[in-house]
Figure 1 (cartoon, rainbow, N blue to C red):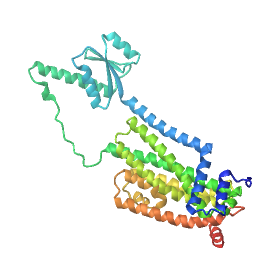
Figure 2 (figure 1 turned 90 degrees about the horizontal axis):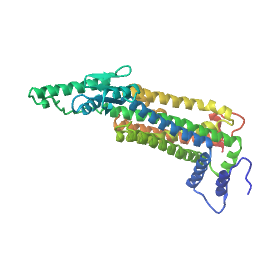
Figure 3 (figure 1 turned 60 degrees about the horizontal axis):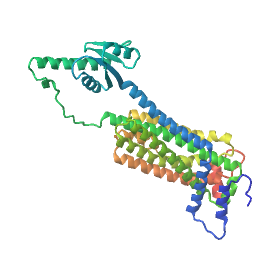
Figure 4 (figure 1 turned 60 degrees about the vertical axis):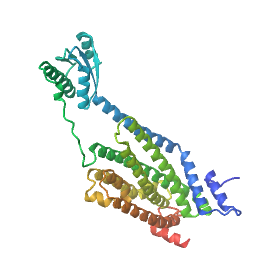
Length: 413
């Protein structure tokens, strides 16, 4: 069976199913077919696949880079020759207290230790417990660890010689009760929220562009005329949003799982539960935000007939998303400020601002509920009104279609 020029196999399948006289298709079935068509089309798109792999590699590379920086800054190698008893254990204990990961190696004589320092196998060598060999200079933290170990063992030995039990030097353990969440946990939640918001912003722009470009391509190739003979405009719009929404959510889920798994595996994140909870709530906000943004981008795409005109109509939406990202960063620095509170309830901005505020733990439950309700109400309004504009503008040719003309055309049809 031959298909009209410009109509792909998936489009033809959708049309033939719908035009069959013996089979009455439900709206959900039609929407499902359109969504399936969008998914299959994008999965065959090399640009989509390459971009997905690039983002995953970028996130994992960031995690590995963070690990290398942290490990390089906190790991030290020390050599010792002679010195008091238990010297190695004392250096390791002092280094741990200072946030260093010390590897201590014992050498038989000073010349061997000196060679190890010169070849940079170790950072420093302690000779007979009273001198330190280094290539150029002694790191302050490492010097404090060595000094603390030597002084502690020397003092303990002097007390023993005087008949005093060295245990009197043991510090008193304090029972610490925190009245606020630990700073590290709060910082980690904020960091995870910030990275997730960057991903959310990227994917909203990325898939929004896909939807708009797809609509323009269908208008330019007259595929839209064949589609509208088989399905209603709102069914086509819903199918596009659902199809690309599934791909976008799957991509975000894979990226978050890969990044979060790598961060936990390499101990970049020390409070996995809090980080996972932050990612989950960002995923929830992504579903709401994508539905709203996808509908708006699709409507914008329907207003023009050429790719050259697309960026002009998309500019307002792009600026709104950029503003949302900037406000989210601002909210991370001052989550209880007036600007952060107000924008976390504005539907076009709350998708990015509210997750950052929630990550700080300073948001009441009713604020989250109210923001979600406002977002849902806006989605309903945009889909209803945007659907009418989308329907009236799809068959417009020859340039940019005005919103007023699109609404008038929809009423006539």
